[in-house]
Picture 1 (cartoon, one colour):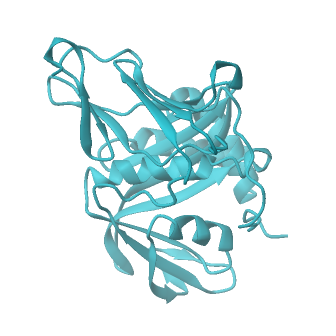
Picture 2 (cartoon, one colour; picture 1 turned 30 degrees about the horizontal axis):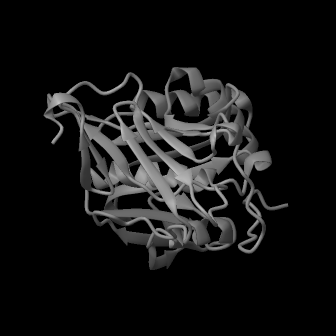
Length: 267
């Protein structure tokens, strides 16, 4: 049996849980990440605990670990980082995304990939990833972000592939690279606590709109919000929350453009 996600490009999408949060992983998520890694790779959980801890310890300027959680349960994670290899281009790579099978087709892998590419874009103008040629689901996911084939080989960056064929992909990162924006209409509300997207007429609200959001604080540092799902009772949609709320003078950016300055400095 293949351990890849089923490739069903025309299958129905499902609404994600109302308390779904996607953001940077920390020590609280170690056990949940290890459980998903063990199930995905078919290895003992102790081995996966060591892998998860190393990934958390490396998180910094050259490595980034994103996690999706609901009800205190980790339901997805994705890794990005710098690779320097003799068999692949030097650069920042997407290094795998895993979603709990019970939570697939909810846009979770898409959001995890979006956040990792936003992180890479702050450091480079291109991104790479490689995959087994048989993994149609991940190839289709990344094609939507502009990844194009560079080469095929039996070994890429020290990784060999079941079936003997791996594919290296590259994407150019632009100010607004996000593909597949919904044809529906989203109402956008902006404030010091975050950016909310509320579904308009014809918007199914089953997957988050494509949006790269960050805030630049008065001291020049940057903050990335965590995505949450707004319950149907509260109008539905998606909330990119800054916690704690932004201080006066902070500037919020959407897809590379400043959309609001918080506090008295606002025009």
